[in-house]
Structure formats: structure tokens, C-alpha cells
Image (cartoon, rainbow, N blue to C red; front, top):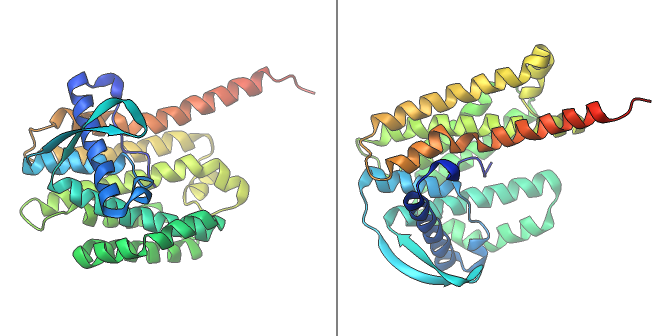
Amino acid sequence: MFGYININGKELSEESKKAYQAYYCGLCRKLKSNCGAKGQMLLNYDMTFLIVLLTGLYELENEESEITCALHPTKKRTVWLNEATDYAADMNLVLSYHNLIDDWKDDRAYAKKALAKMLDKDYARVKEKYPRQVKALEDFMRKTAEVEAANETNLDAVAGLTGEMLGELFCWKEDEWAEEMHTLGFYMGKFIYIMDAYEDYDVDLLKKKYNPLIPLGKDNGQDMDTLCKLLLTSMMSECAKSFERLPILLHADILRNVLYSGVWSKYEYLQLKKKKLEEKAKRRPHK
């Protein structure tokens, strides 16, 4: 579920890349201060996007510092922290918690079950602080399990569950921007779900695991890639429309970079990987 919302560094200015990295380092520091070293293990770029989005929308002021990071001991790192960092760190934690539980249920990954157990108190703290968002996430996990058990083939309905959940998480404050933020998060969530299903398609097909794209693949054959590209493009188009309706000037270049380019990095990687496999198969001598 993580790893799809990132920047395209090749198309971003050095100044904006440094700003994005400063927010990322701020998220890392906040996870550590909230949960200890185990919190840093949950770090991801997806929530960095949320920090930049909320910072731009509410024009938040940053608390800036310079630190020496254990992973980069030779050079000091710039850290930016604000109210959105606190919120994103809490949302990062609850999302990661359920992701760990889900991995445990799917693969019996004991290490992930143990890490989730270590986060129980932190999860309870966030649940008390943000009951609406955590309830949305818990409802999402329950409903997702139900549709998978029922082998639901309605892709729009299944992807919509992720959309509804992320829409609630994107609504930090219940104010005049809440509806638009929910819409942005809704289509972002649907995009993430479809991209995740697309990435897992071949493995799920081989292992006969649930994936709502499999029935579509059987019906559409060689047009599967084209269909997925159209679905993904449609989701991001709606997401971008919501963003453009928001009065965001601060860090708008970073946010547009993510929405119009960065989110496609994984898709382009998968296409390149598929092309290489096809070329390798052509070169293989036939027996």
C-alpha cells in the first residue's frame, strides 16, 4: 500500500528537492520522538506528500534545525517540523500498524506481528486523539477483508474502500477545505489500490490470490495494460482537479511534480521491467 506517492527528482529544482527532503527528515524525527527507534522503521514518502500538501494549504510555519543522522553521519541534514508533521506522523503510524497486521495475516510474518505488538500503546494514543480517522481505517480493513473473502469483482467498489479511507485521513481539519481534501484523498486512494493490484497481478495470478484485476485481465486479454493505464490516468486526473481547486501557492511545484509525474514512477518501472522480460524471452533459444 505504500511506495507510490513520491517525487520525480529529475524534474524538480534543487531547492524544491531540498525542501521535500527536509520535510521527510522531519517526519523521521517526529516518528522517532513519538515511538522511539521503531517508529523510524515505519517511515515512508507517501506521508511526506501529505505534510507538503497540508503545509501548502494552511501556510504553516516550519521549525528548522540541523541534525546529524545515523544513516548519513558525514553531512548534517536540514529538518523542518510543523503541525502537519505531527499529524502525518500519527497517520503514518496507524497505517503502518494495520499494514503490519495485514502482512502477518497474509504471510505469517512473525517479525511484523511482533513490531505491531510493540506499537499497541502508540496506536491507542493516536486512536484517542483522532477517533474519526482511525475508525475510517479500521472500517476499511474490515470491509476489505469482507470483499476479499467474497471474491468481489467490482473493481470500482473495492478500490473505493481505499479511497474512502484515505479521503478521511487527508481531512486533517473539518473546515471549508474538508470536502475538497476528501475528494483529493479519495481518488488518490483509488489510484494507489489499482496500482498496487496492477503491480501484484502476475504473482497473484500465479498463486491464485485475490486480485480484482484478474477477471478484467481474462476478459480483456492483451488490452489489460491499456485498461489499467486508462483507469490510473482517470483517477489521477480527478485527483489533480481537486488539487488545482485548492488555494495552494506554497510548494505548489513539489505537489504538481508528485501528482503529474512522481506517481507514475512505479508504473514506468513496471513497464520497463515487463519489456526487459519480453526481450529476454525472445532471445532465449527455442527447444
